[in-house]
Image (cartoon, rainbow, N blue to C red):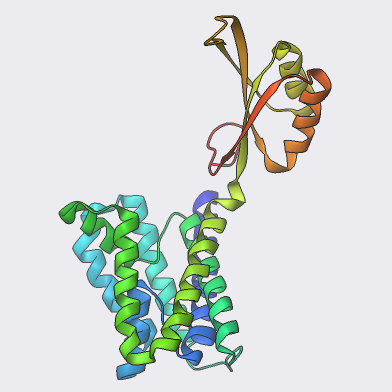
Length: 276
């Protein structure tokens, strides 16, 4: 229950931030977006239709079409994501003064807010619908990868919006979409970034004891041998938070200055001792 409440809270917060980015930065500065939200923005410019209602209708149709491709948990959070994003888009429509009328600033911060919003929704286990569902349909029936399908759909929507907002605003839109995509990556992956350390040393036992004793981290001992010398070697494998990296490097250096250390960036770690 606590996990569900946490996820729903993240989803609601993400949906609100997403709506603010769209209604108070993108739309007042005649910018568009990729995916379904881009379609809703373009229909708002051309027909004056409410982005919140249009977003809800389009995504409801996509959910009905592609629900078999989503697991039950994902479907539940995706439906919540669509409902809250549409609700906040509707509630915040035309109610506040635009944050800025500088197009470049609007593109940068619209991308930032939309990215933060979508990232929080993704962290909750849901999606904002739209491109994610279309990408799954393309994967099943056309054999496309999810990433390529989403990218192609976004590009098509932005390209079509050129006829409504003009080439210059479209260029600013690409800036916003790029910043948004990078922000989503950081929110989803960056906040849980860890470091995986491989240590080859003749003092693995001492190093392992210090890692477990001084750092409170576990270590796995792997058995191997040198490909050329055939000499047996013990290899330590450790996963730590990035803020612990300097402590570990100092520990290894003090114990064995000749140790061979390889550091990898890890985007997600699940299991005991790490967040799930």
